[in-house]
Length: 176
Image (cartoon, rainbow, N blue to C red; front, top):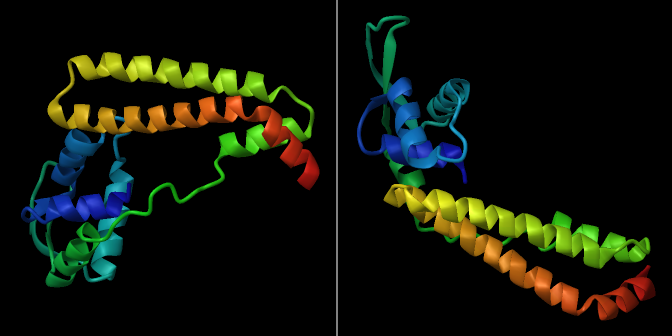
C-alpha cells in the first residue's frame, strides 16, 4: 500500500493536524503496522513540496504549535487519478518462494520439503488471521479477508508446484 496516497486520501476529508492524521491512519490502516510520527511528518513535508497539500493554519498546543494541513486542488486531482488507476496484479512473477523452489531443485535439495514447510507456515498464518477475524471490526475483517485470499492463492500455487516437481526438476536441469 502506498502510505502517502492513503494519507492524502484521509486528508481529503478535511483539514487536519499531523497528530490527528496519524491516529486516523492507525485506526483504519494500522492494524498490522502503525505508522510512525516521523513518517507522517516527512510525508507531509514531501506533499507540501510537491504541491499536493498546504499548511492552512497553526494553533498552540501542549508542545510545539500544531500545524493544520489541507489538500490542494492538485492533491485532489492526484488522488482522483490514483483512485481510478488499476493496480497491477502480482507485479513480481518470481517471488522468493519461486526462487527457493527452483534453486532447491537445481542444488539437489529437497524442494518438496521446502514446499511442505511453506504450506505449514501459510496454514498457521491462516489460522492466526481467522482467529483474529472473529472479533474484529468490519474494516479489519476486510483487510484480513484480503490476506486470507492471498494466502489461499499461494497455497494453490504450492499444491500445483508440488504435483509438478518432477517435471519442473527436468526443466530446471535442462536450463541449468
